[in-house]
Image (tube, rainbow, N blue to C red; front, side):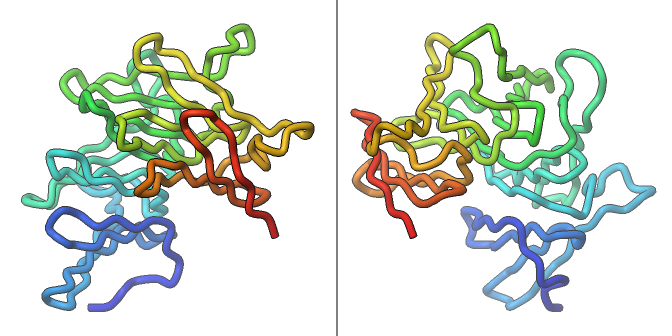
Length: 231
């Protein structure tokens, strides 16, 4: 079998070396390099154990080797040993997923699953209870999440959670449960080049590389100062 589509939204390599591809409208493509074989997992209308949606936006493997999939219609947990999906769909009421579009997934040091949504902020899942805690923008709280559109959530080597939002970069303080903001300042060349943050990566020296809507930034975490790489 071959890959099912040309449009790839997400890629993840699991601990066993399997490549997981999240596609636009063709679900999940699982590639076993040892067999040169693709296996496809798609939404099935009458199967509650199938993927919630075929537009897959994010893929993440947790510490227990479960595969988490963010789609245009909710969150999925996939167990490779039995090929079954557990669905987390948006519902009314506290404790449920609060937005259908899950753009990013990560796991913190305590095992909570963090989901970055396209308008509902961060939804943090307690796997034991199955309930979500929300971190959202609050205009009355300067230490709340910078914006409810979350593009990526990234855990660094010091177990710090960084959040790429559409209104700056946030660092989560696990003790105070508050967010520290890093934003573009037109009068400061060592600030971020843009507030529309798309992606984050930490290098071997412990510096953060931040992709924005207007250039690349390298941030020194201790000072918060950035070096800009622009076109």
